[in-house]
Amino acid sequence: MTELLPNFVHGAWVTGTGAGTPLVDPVTGAELVRVSSAGLDLPRAFAFAREQGGAALRAMTFGQRAERLAAIAKLLQSHREAYGAIALADSGTTAADTAVDVDGGIYTLGQYARWGAKLGDAKALLDGGATPMSKDGVFQSQHLLVPTRGVALFINAFNFPSWGLWEKAAPALLAGVPVIVKPATATAWLTQRMVADVVASGLLPEGALSVICGSSAGLLDQLQPFDVLSFTGSAQTAELIRSHPAVVRHSVRVNIEADSLNSALLMPGASDEAQALFVREVVREMTVKSGQKCTAIRRALVPQDRYESIGAAIAAKLAGITTGDPRDASVRMGALVSREQFDAVQAGIVELATQARVLFDGRRQPLVGADPAVSACLAPTLLACDDPDGSDLVHRVEVFGPVATLMPYRDLAHAQALIARGEGSLVCSLYGDTDGEHASALAACATELAACHGRVHIVSPSVATTQTGHGNVMPQSLHGGPGRAGGGEELGGLRALGFYLRRAAVQADGAVIQSLGALPLTV
Ligand code: NAP
Image (cartoon, rainbow, N blue to C red):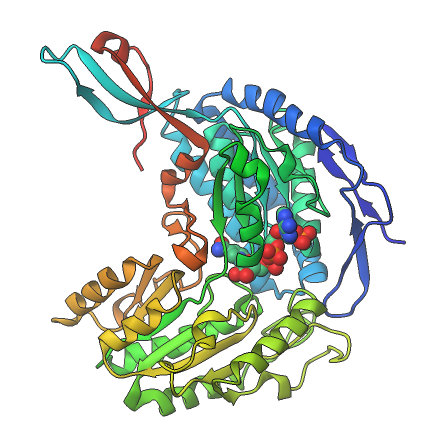
């Protein structure tokens, strides 16, 4: 039997009981390690984090905590190679895809370290200025932000074992709130190893960071009134989380990042250059991390008269993508995370194909160095939906893999109506030009689409080489989306601290307000 990875709880490494769940190489099918959370003393784990971790973090200033984040980023950087090896084995990702996860996490930590340094000696933050509430102006109201006195529980998805931890932990730890992370079982190894490295370094106080691998059973029952819960995963699990009795009873603050039918829109009258950028980005989004990104383009909308030619252009590019074992240098796209996901993606394609044509069929493409009977490798598939008004599946079914659907629109109002049928998405990207009136057309379209998205990403020839990518979540910008996407908000600079801080109005003589000694939170 392979090694059973220990959990880190109440300041100790504890191995779960039982045989555990195996983590498997999605290319070869080989068992790698096992995880188990059975038998853990969860009440003790949560109490320790809350009491020891919370108190120690709150005793530090924002600036001191920011210094720790910077040191963690440096530490993780020094172990990059080991993380790459784990990701290759457990996630089946190419080096470029691993970098999105590992380097993305380190970069996000570094950003929060830099932003946090500006908050210096503060232990509390001011939200806005003081407002006079009496005629003489002496009695005032000031909103104050302080770290919540609970624990931040993260339940994460399988596709970002590194970034998924650090994009949440960076603002939580900076805010002064201890973290317990439960990574998705399939890829828990990388998260566990990163936590182990941080624990061994002694960079964080005891109880500030814990990791529980394996089943989530009993975790939510531990939640208390000042805890916060951040969940990333499917809409289906999100529903269970939101309605959990402990969450409901204790008004636990919850952030949900769920799935999303993100779209890309080629503007009417877009130049050939803008169109080429659209084609490139659709192909990139379908293939980066084998399409297992919550932000990936699922629906690509183009003017009716270009529908056929753009379909052919995307398909031609997809034909050049080699899929298979990322250990082979010629491979551009690695595996899906597991054979279960492989089956789910295949079933998703079949379902979408009841309302769309298959323009490029990944299921018929050869694999490089991977056994189709064993591996979770699957080449990209492009579908074309001739009647996006009469189809509901293409707006509703998220196939979490290298799959996108092309659809034609008549005019901009039609395109916007189709995009809105996603019922709230993480991101929408627009492709057009910025000369003359084109810039205001893009701005107007972005304003219209902002209501149903967390982010609107605009690509034009003027930013062709500098734009950060439709699917890349940058810490400077908000991540999350309304409705179907979960209604959550993460990142967006120091805005992210808001989830981990409690806002209270302090009403007093201005002299007291002046003595609060807090710094303004400028995002
Ligand atoms: P999932 O099946 O919902 O699992 C997500 C996490 O929830 C895992 O850690 C899972 O643990 C845990 N979980 C499962 N059942 C639970 C329960 N009853 N109570 C508490 N926790 C439970 O999602 P996934 O398959 O890992 O991830 C893929 C989905 O995540 C996609 O739909 C994707 O769009 C979405 N996603 C969204 C974002 C975003 O930022 N919006 C980012 C990444 C992914 P186990 O692994 O142990 O089952």
